[in-house]
Image 1 (tube, rainbow, N blue to C red):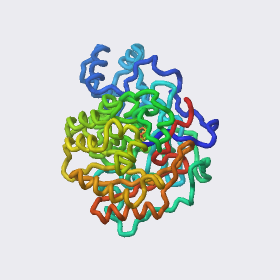
Image 2: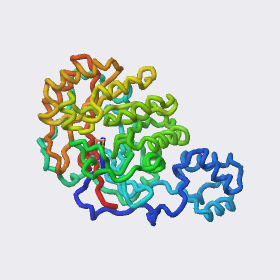
Image 3: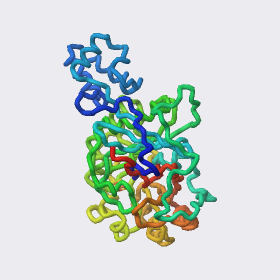
Length: 428
Ligand code: SF4
């Protein structure tokens, strides 16, 4: 999973959000579900059904201020404000734009801490979970891995020229839509306790869980920025940012329910990635189809021995325990479980590893696919990138073994938005 990234010069960061005063003293409406919004209205002396008007305004029309909710009378809006209610949607405080169109955001929720979200126009080449709409052929005859110019660990550079940091959280009103589909990657925790050795978020340690409103708020803020018409535009969500969603299970699922029920995004357009938290997978298996995203398992190694080194969580829940839990997740027609596999040079990218992964994935008996991700370097992480040849060979071997395999394109590497590169850029 990803993590808030670092940039060359944090002093350049400019706070963009008009709502950047002390947070937490008011009563945020954003994050409440329909039932809680109805209760809020009843408390204000109104019929409960007026909660639906609130939900419509906050989640569909994306209003950021109670004063803009014209379906409610001025007197009612005043009463709500006097009672301490505010919309308080998490706000984008900084935007970094890559030469490839990817945008990385710092988003601030209830307190001064920020998390990162990423917008990837045209998707990232493997995000849908079933491989049906990711824009790549399932088993490419000629793998299209792009050579990475020999960058090594420690070669981290400032964002390349051509990218930019914006001074406004909103796009210009007349900005043309330059994408036909997009993927939004969001965070579920500030920092992470799982300690995957290749991941920059792990360097932060665990700081706190995000609330449901803070998770859903990242999505709504990004939808708002790009003028996305939910239901018309093709949008995928991936819960693959900072944090382990299944270690913040209740808030993660509450966010999913908000996004499904109130924002209107299908759970089949969402994929949650877990490092293999077995009790979380077991709970996930009991969620109804109506709110259950697709599942991705962050595998990253061919055996327990190697995985235990790369992902210490494997010592608690080894591969077979994870697979056993995944088998209980009911899949929809054509749905596949994704196994994500970060290729670490010399550690997990050898031909024999590919053979073992193929055996492992086929042995699960699950409808599955593999997403390959060439590791992105980060400061203080002692791995090397895989060579282009190793990636190509790995992909070819999986394909030849009959395993559906995709190579996720590196996105936004110049702004540190690529997978595994997210790490909080500023302390606020
Ligand atoms: S689960 Fe692992 S990869 Fe994901 S954010 Fe945590 S440490 Fe990073």
